Length: 275
Image (cartoon, rainbow, N blue to C red):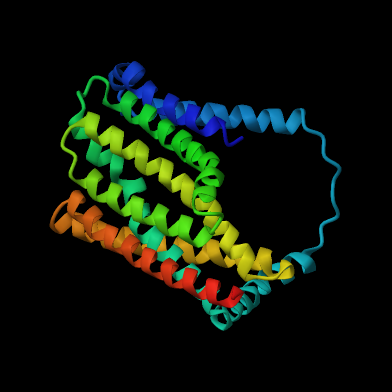
């Protein structure tokens, strides 16, 4: 269940500080206690699913399974053609690629950047708490998104552009933090606006496609966003190695500025189409 993720992350951070010395005495790493707990939980879920959840067996159709795999390239091709023929949709997807190129490196790298700011005795616990707070903050931001959209008179493009602009500012501010208090404060605000950006982005996507195309376009959106995230991580990793993590985040914020520009152009285009 989605609500269980933050609590699991909190526990995963707490256990190494709480029981890490025990695992080190028997020849394991302090982090192995989290892996062992994760394995125990997964085994528990497996046993519960196996014996408690009843499901009627379904007929196995190898031909249908094969056909499902062979149609994947065709689905990607058709979805890409739909996006290329729709300039508004193309701009939205490009903006979301830039968005992930900027923000995904922050999501992945921040624990290694924040941990040296903490005392070793409780660093893992704080990282676990902050990771849980990250997910809670995204959920809180998503709940605020409709209210923020009303401020912009339900113009989703303007809401998304404002969210991206705030994220660019917070990402630069995050890179400049040298204390854990300042880092946590900015990181929570950053996470809230990550949540704010999700609803308007989805609303614009649904507006740009027909009902029969939505599932296909959602798959294409996920694909291009993951490609953007991977590219951003490669670029940020290289910059962080050569210079520093804050430098990588500041440079990454440029992609958010590009996303703001694209969404602003998209807003003008959608407005002119309605006139």
